[in-house]
Image (cartoon, rainbow, N blue to C red; front, top):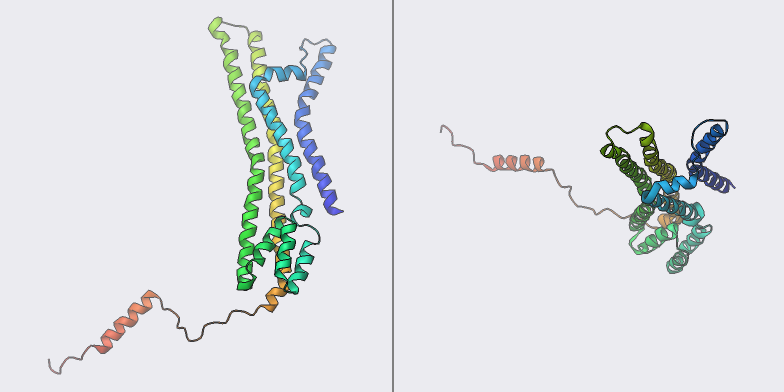
Amino acid sequence: MDRRKSLSKFLWASLLCICLPLASPAFCFAAEDSESGAGSDISKVDFRQLVDDAGTIGIIIAVLSIAMVALIVEHVISIRSNALMPPGLAEEVHGLISQQQYRSADSVCKSNPSFLSYILSAGLAEVQLGYGAVEKAMEDAAMQQSARLNRKIEYLSVIGTLSPMLGLLGTVWGMILAFSEFTAKANPDVAELAPGISKALITTLFGLSVTVPALASFAFFRNRIDELVAQSSLLAEHVFADFKRSTPAPAKQPGKPLRKRPEEELTQRLADQQGTRPSPPPGG
């Protein structure tokens, strides 16, 4: 129940992060419309007009926003506890390992592909070499799968970085077009420049509306991956707990002398040379 509540809270939070920035222009224009209805001279601007004024860069930002929403939905489905750690998998594999049925345990892992099953399968491949090799194989597998998940959510960071840059690009281009009026007229009125500047700032608004939920979602999924990777690694160690107890510790090789440091070897060599050097004759 707690996981479902946390998942539902995140869905609502992500929905608000997406909708609020996109809805903010509508609130602003609604306020302007009310003022114009009261007798002000502010012109009416609707959202469709904003999209038309955004131009090609606005279309690119809109495509990025659609990709962002699709990635968020996919990550919510794939990066969760039940997807990375299927219920019952650890208990089933633990029972098979206790019975020394390693091939059956590996078949169960391969039939249930997930983050945990990949780690357990890597450990089962090294059971003949002892628990030390199993532990090392599981650590390497966890690092590999963690890197894969982090690369997977990097696209949200890329979208969050590109969106404001594209918005700034559209703004700069719009400002260039607006101030190009000076080439046609020596002293143009401010009223002639205002529409061009207003259109130039629209792309910045759209870019910021996309980057806020993208970066917020990226931070959430990154922390979520770290948490689930730690839980999966700990659960994998518990699965091999009985195997660890049944495996004898590697015996130390007796009689192998410890290697001295280079300074100690040099000192010992000089002492040996001085000890074997013949003593000088008396009186001479």
